[in-house]
Length: 274
Length: 266
Image (cartoon, rainbow over all chains, first blue to last red; front, top):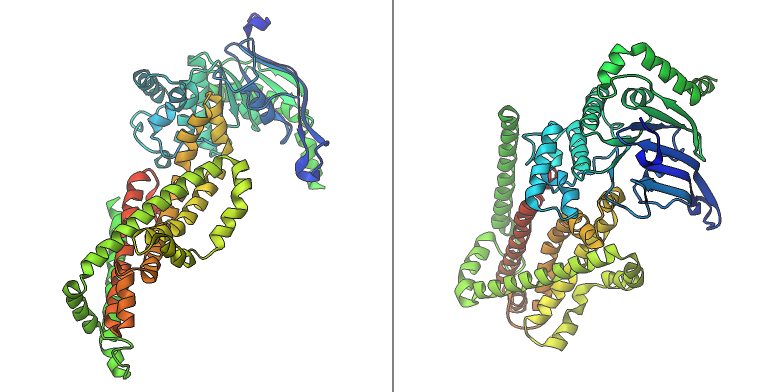
């Protein structure tokens, strides 16, 4: 793949973010540095994972990508445009499904389109198509509380895709699900991302998930978070994580071991024993 | 579904039977209890004498006209009070600055016993329906405003952020998220308001004028007709129940998307 900035869907250039530490000290002048000097770019059609210890600023990075926060230093570009406010180029998906309880599943999927003023007929076509892709046909007129956690998260994915974003920013979307549902949803996500040729930046705590789903993995340090390693996952079957896990067990395992070393998971475990 | 519904139905039937038994015991105690304990009828009239007084009062006191007046005042007070509570609750909810400015005064007004304003309103508006409606408005306003205000404050910021990533305007965020998300607490406030509206109206009627169930109550008490005060109390309760049922019916329609377990039976 040609690696020129023209090919980047989302790019962080020397991004840093600090927050006023008013909660603990009440002093306006004290700052917590959440992230510093982050350089990261995701090419068109790529799926890139971001892993790192809790509180290392991964979510802060995504929030800056979606324009909800402004970086304190550096810039974020989406489709070569500087992000200075929330914009429709990025789709956002969190651990919480954020489905609106008073809207049917179809109306929830159409939520973003409705905000953007898309005519009802086009909305309807788009939501029908995505609900089918996300295997929710037959549940269009159900309300969120009538669906299981996995189905609700699939509806959230359909809502994110409906607005046709350039980049999907996924913040641990599956971490609240049970292990089995999680694997099924990973499979759904990978297939959908491949079929729609979507670009995604994916935060996860699950090392195996990052290896199974991505083309590249960025590893972040403790706070103040910065990128300490970039790993190319040089394996086939990105569109089929179940097969990747199953057929390439050894290779996937090697990558996971390497990530564990980078994150000092083993050392932390032995500290706990003492 | 049908096998799980069956035992529940039986349980409900048992409870309904027990409820009816309580009513029977209460009525029997009311009818023969006062005589048994030698309590004179001007202190506690028996259930049957209250019933005969009710039949008499329909013609003699125009009971249903008074009931209708009280009902209309209650509806007017409740609707005006809840609309104001809703509007101001939403405004203060989305504007922390406005809440900061007004909160001390709102708190003071909330603590002030609203029924104490009734004589003042009679001085202002005379023996008309307005003082009664106004007391009801004041008393209904606060629980609804407080519930809406709190609910708007508690809207999940991630939900608002989601809408912002779709380029939502401030008005869209209000209309599509905050307004709807505050509906369940709004209806809890409306339920409370429906039971309070009748108190405001009754006090207003007791203080000034010759119309409405509150006036009937005072007349009955003043003329030593205790049975008539019982009739008035029962009719006031009946009006209150009507208002409450109306709110519950609207709530079931508007909040139809909530799981059934989130509806309380009371």
